[in-house]
Picture 1: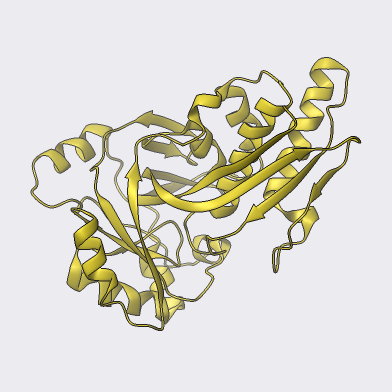
Picture 2: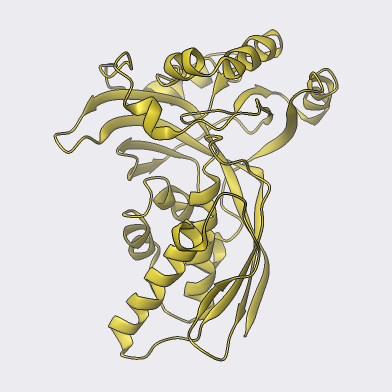
Length: 292
């Protein structure tokens, strides 16, 4: 096989996100539930006759040398060389970009994870899921989740995961039109860093005992992001009339859960035109999970 086309790189939502502390190296200790949704970027891979790794699409504001997808592909190529003594063929990578940068949806990390999974298959590299997760972690803390590929209760810096059940619902997501730099949020002096740790059953039992779809925990990063970026606060305030609205990741996108597609369409029809908004269904597993 010389190509793989239409490989999904789905977005993620953080159903809650608590900051429990800070390590000596500056990384924050987190607890969250990662939820995949059926909306995201699409990647295409075509093997070359040389060993070059080439991005064939332009991404505004993302130089090829700093693109997580390209760095992930190079890292895997080097790992295959290390293991086999032979450099695998190069690849042309095209990215149909849908997810916004600085949106808290994990777009760049998801693209990188899709590249690792697809190229592991194309190159017949034979790395296990766990090996790919470890390979991706130094590039970005969210990359292991996308390779893990299912709804997860995550701890540590996001790398320690357990499967968890979450509502099989629909989500309405608003893009407030600003890019929120993750570093600015985590460096803020007034960020809450001492939320008491919870256990996985706290999340599961809460959802089982409530009639609504969300309502568990909060996003500790939200207070900082809304104070620094007023459009995020405005979008949360508007969406709160339709459900338990909250920010995903370090922002800027905000979301709420609804029971079904009809309800999602009703909310979307009312969203002010100044915002881009979309609906998405919860995914239990990554579309490329069968490759691993």
